Length: 287
Length: 287
Image 1 (cartoon, one colour):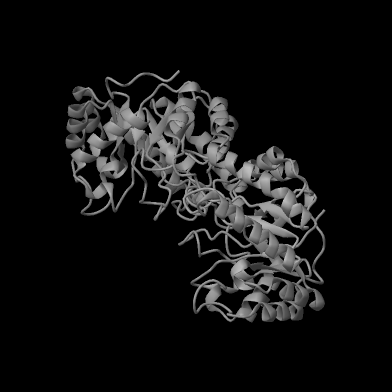
Image 2: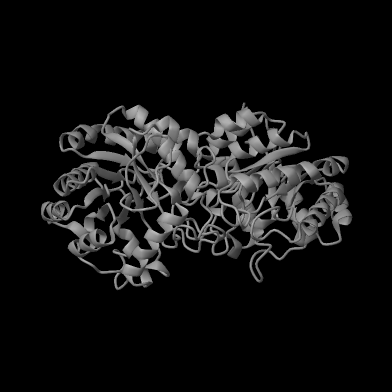
């Protein structure tokens, strides 16, 4: 059953990417504390940070958020585990994976997002790369679990299949969860990456609410100009946001809805407070 | 069972897009007759043209190919049937659809490719658009059948889902075939569009050899710079070409393998005869 959020938007979380954190001279340029203050002021329920914004201040920022009454819903992200841009040698990748778990634990972020990385050099197709992802996540899951962090495998859009994510469907993500078989491992569902998948509702039901660790909002613009940095505001694209949310909640997810919009030439150029107001309005009207 | 083509490449067909037909000042700039002559000389088994290359000369070009011993394996393509770029009003689209069937029949091309078009304006997600595609194809299939032309629904990569193709998986294409239920309707399978799909072999088996009307070759470059015009030569990317071909043939397909490479900044700039020689070598070694 879809919950009624018409009178508040505490189910909404901000992923700081929405404010253009990661492009020099664009976006808010706010400190994590400023982000937390503004989210609280506007009545959001949570925030998701990126590692580059936190540095060595995880515990301090996590405490600041908790004292402010804001949930740190997640942290982006592990290093790539496989593919052409994964840290080499493997131990370096594992060390960085552990550092990302430590940071999530320090922040008190319950979920750490995994972006798998692309097709492992020297191999073809997804099979071997997914197998190595399963091995690495199985290896790290007990450590994450001990630190109170769950690992969310996020399938990315198939356009990223070569270099950024050998994991491109919810189906494969649930298969990975089943292969790994650890309760600290689940999936993240991002509208941008999965909107086109007509089998989505069935795969989310298969995942079940326990395994869905995050739900990310934006929109797919009909004429996307740049697959990395031209995401749309909810309502401006072709994704069926109400149906996808309904499927996520029917599957049992009752966590926050996290808005994550990479938009270098549009939303990152607008005043960040206006962007947040628009996110809230759209969350109420079209999500 | 995979056939042995080590001593010939008559199973290879050229889609003329590979020679950059459609960009001013790039590619071969050959007439259809020159394309036919060169394909015959190099020992290819077939050719696939685009409508813009044929104009009013379908019967003459078809006859020329047959006299030369070359199969005209297909014609690209119908207008978009739905989405923001479909001809309006609908009757204009239907008239152009019929004109494309006429051209395929005139050429003696057994297969006409359908690219569906994107998400219908005013709707969200794929559902309504796919329903309209099914209605239109069901309406046109008897006409195509009477003219000896089969209609190949080609799922495009999900990156085109918004504006070019609401049909983005083989699964949905087979669902459409089943919904339409006409023997003149099948699917085309293009490596570029489906390489990432780990459920591919199962869906091809579900389609069956009778419904697979075309198999298109190229490669997905790990770092694709432009999703329209940066396709790779077979062997230069991350697609598992041998496994995909094996799955297509295991499903019962015994038609030609059609090389179709859109590559504005690489292969279209090379001498077309060299491009064809490379296609032949790669077809033998990596496909």
